[in-house]
Length: 216
Image 1 (cartoon, rainbow, N blue to C red):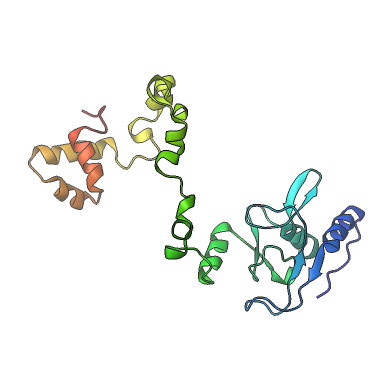
Image 2: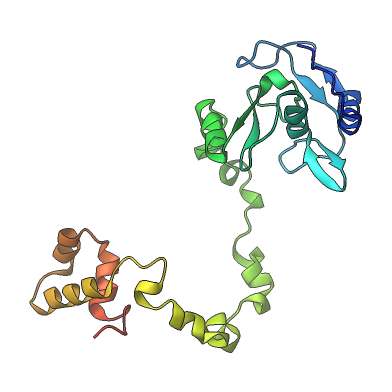
C-alpha cells in the first residue's frame, strides 16, 4: 500500500518528517497482519515505547499522526491501536481505532497481558516498594494526619457528603432504620445481610452504629 500524497503544505511537512524516519520492515513480524510493519525510528518515545513527533509544542505519537494523515479523523476518546502490536509501526493497514477497554481486550485475547506469574510482581519483586522503602516510611511528613488532615481542615466537605449524599453510599436512611429494627428484634446480622442482599460488613457497621451515626 502506498499512502496518498497530502496537498496541504503544513500537513505535507508533517508527512515528510514522518516518512523520513520510517523504514519498511523486511518481513511480516506478526501473525495478525498480512503486510510488513513500517518502523518509525523517532528517537523520543512515550511511556510504553511509542515514538513521538513534536508538533507545535505538542508531543504526539507517530501512530496517531499516521492514522490522521492516511486514514482520517480520530474521534475524541479513541485510541490508535495496532493489529501488529508494534508501537513503532505506522503502516496504516495495521492501525485501528478503539476505546481503552477494546484495546485491553485485544491485548488479553492475544495472550499479551502480564498476569499471574508473568506479572511484574513475580518477575521483578525487587521493584515493589514495600516496608521501610515505602514512601509512608521514607517521607512520613507527607502523610496528612491529625489537624493537617483535610477532614479537620475542611469539615464542611464531610457535612456535604453525609449519608445518602455520599456518592459511594450503599445504604439509605430508610434501609439503616430497617436493619437496626431487625437487629433489635433479635435477627442475626448474617440473616439480615442475606435477606437484604447487602454485604455483611456494611450491615454490621450500620447495625452497630459505626456508620450512619446521624440516623436515630
